[in-house]
Length: 344
Ligand SMILES: [Mn+2]
Image 1 (cartoon, rainbow, N blue to C red):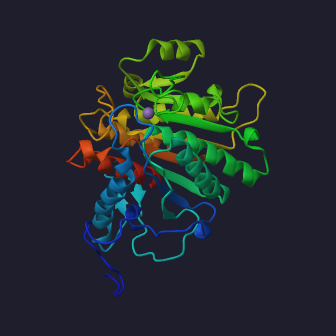
Image 2 (image 1 turned 60 degrees about the horizontal axis):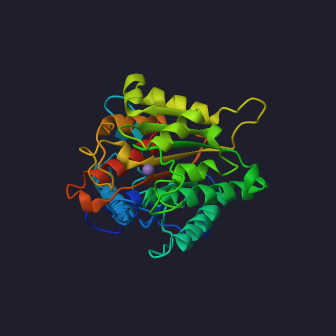
Image 3 (image 1 turned 90 degrees about the vertical axis):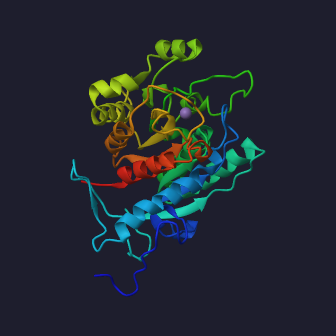
């Protein structure tokens, strides 16, 4: 039975933190806490903007999942096929603790200044990672990944007593595209098409600790030749289907965690997810119109496969709600995060 002080709200009521997790300030962030952080910025978008509305839409969509759990006497949800469980912490009302979930709100963004926004994102992520949190970042366009990775590296360095360039971070890029542009005639070196290239230039990451999952269709020849020349590791959408999503995810994680000969292992893993890895017919709320992608269920299985205790931060970007009045894209993003947080 419900306790008298439990409040069960319909999905459309109340404050929209992710899964109604407690809103926290930096001071309340403890080691091991999974902290949702929004970056509502799409000034790095090279196609159709709208991802600035992503964090709000994903949080709002998560309330439907929370309602489903909180309106039952036993809030634990169990996956029919896998037996995987998810406890949304309904009615816990306790202080934020390791392994728990909290919502930090959104970082400061400056729509007319990518530079100021990047500095703000990097600073916020440095503080969160520096306190030992596991940030779950809601974009924003895919450019926000670059300052996020920089901030996470700096935060890890603070914790470990290292210089940022001494931190070793494995990086998995889940995306319909490689995002390996080196320069762009219109946007230059800093926009959502260059994210992975910029990350690769960080001494903490480098091309040898990166892997790509979900690419397909036409790719610019310059990027294709770069991928071939550098012998980069990637699993196309078709590869993921052939191998199975869980297996492909496992292979990618092990590749980026594996140390090149003579080098020590990584301090952590970073996962970035561009929602356009999903076929646009199943996830239409995004800037890119890109066919041949994963189905929603393949995508959720892939995200389950990316769950790993070595993951120190994850982001989910490019959800652009204005292109999807059905709200399925934001729901899929919220479900993906639930999959990532679920357990056996
Ligand atoms: Mn991308």
